[in-house]
Image (cartoon, rainbow over all chains, first blue to last red; front, side, top):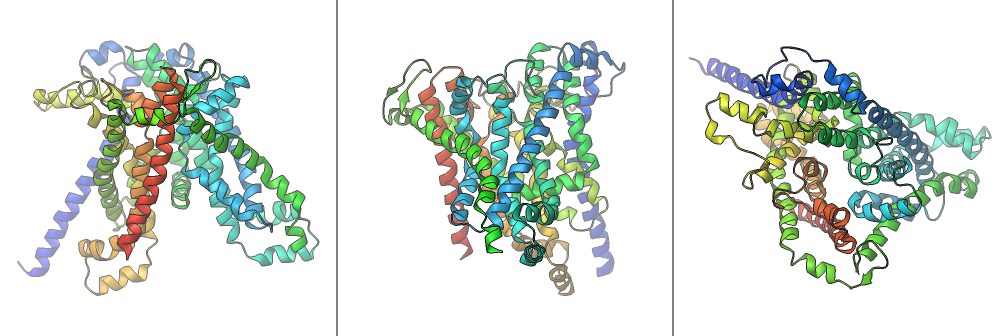
Length: 283
Length: 291
């Protein structure tokens, strides 16, 4: 066997090993989710009777109506959607305006104010839990959406401001100068000239803000116990207590909780990936 | 121009709302947390000022010390398993294999799911009677390995760590992937001309060039472990007999189950200080290594 052929067959072996490795890892990441979908359609008899791993023999769609109706999952889903959207909307406005002032405008306290915001990134949310609980209790915010809207928004600010301040800083000064000659005031300059240019970055910030509000657990379970305002994460926790021994409805609730985000991710996977990388790298 | 961009009213309109919200919530909370940590307080009436007594108690509390140790162990295990695996996957995916985009998308899926869903799912996977793990072991004829993974004091801690690591591999893979992709093509081409093949170019060219990202990820992983909460809460809530306790779960149960507001607050201040110190130490360590 010549040298070249040897290395070629060696290459083929390496490639085979790599492919097997990738497929195995992909299966390990995906199979639990497929399994989830399977058992969300199964009856207890089927799960406890031996068919644990495979697809259901009888597709029990009632699990879904059970979870949605008696398990309140519909309500939790609705709460999660609107809470996350409000958080994204408010965060976007606050980040777009304050980052503009912190990056393009000229004032003395710019640097210290910027660093105050950035310091927020190093603070673990746990340390704010009890004080916020006590404030919210005295303001009668506990068990109202305000109790989660507020911390979600505030904790989204530091990373958002940091990323967007950097994004504004890369824009050339000539843009503003020519607008200045045309007689723009500062609000027009912000809204008509600069804001449109950072929209893609802002979209990425909106995406990871949405995901972190959607998935948040600690604030939601501490501040909200009224089923009327529970979000999906807390709702699923109580669902698993309610259907402790019944796998089907819990599975159905989990599928409903996961479905929308997963669908958005699969449709916009590139954008979602970029958004999360941006949140990490700059943060 | 200066006049327009120095418009004080506009600056105030743009920054004050965010600043008030931020200062009123985060900064105020941290200060209050520290104040509470100096009190003996059950949440009713006034707390009694006890100075640093809670902190002294903290370091004599075996459960707390175990919790702190557990979070460090999580950091260490994640560092030596998750990061190498993520780097390996990223190296493979950037080497021009078929289905690059498909694998990248699939590996990242767990990152988009909430810890509650993943935790609940793994509770089912670990279920001693009907879980997929014991079923699989049974099918392979390994009945002797079957156990109550999260209920057994010997296996609970590692079993609680596995889903955390499992969930985040894709995230770090993506960070490495992005970082490798940003290496200039010229460098890679030049290495190829010099006869570097896949393996050698990974060791001598790619890995040194993505070192800054490895560093960033290492800091993330360790700081993230110190703050770990969601998955532990869903999977074990610190049990059995505090075997899987981490500082944040202990803080939570002290405050909200035992009404020990002062003691619980000293744990949360401990987490803050630990995170800051760890971040500084790691930065310093990596910095020294550079020179």
